[in-house]
Length: 254
Image (cartoon, rainbow, N blue to C red; front, side):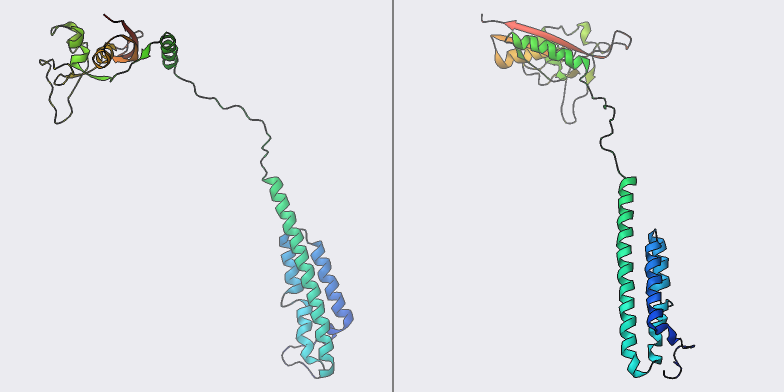
């Protein structure tokens, strides 16, 4: 053998012997196989593939060999390191697969687990009753007529022959609505047949729908007029300022 390797002291060329190289490989393979987690494998790879591993140290000592022995030693160490690298990569793949399978089990959601039925919404009782009533009228061949809840005072009162001093016109019985900006209204002026110029109220009954239908359609006329109406009743167990009505109007020819 040649003289001391001046780059690495002490020279340990004995690590290049076939028996020593094979022993380093077997030790690495055993360590990889014994690793039961990725962290343990990482530590084993550092010990057997790192810069201070036996094969890495042996590779450094190749320069201390005679020229005629360097090629054979280099081939031997290179093959050993390749075998170790292959074994480490294979074990890495196995442990990653085990980890992924474990995560799938631990984080799995059992979609077959029975769950309580979520409560479903229902239509309001008033809406249900209104639908039943209108179905009866429709079954008789009548039409369902609707109108605005904010109504012209003329349609709500004058068209129905309510006198100007009728008690129902008082503010203690009726909700009056301010006219939109830029328009005018007058409680004294009953307005024309279209309600123009009259004041605005929250309708106190669905009768204005009948007046509108008569003006628009004429006779014969068979209509049912369901809807919400408003009056200034005090709130108690049997009164509300808003409630529902259904009115019917039947007029034949003549």
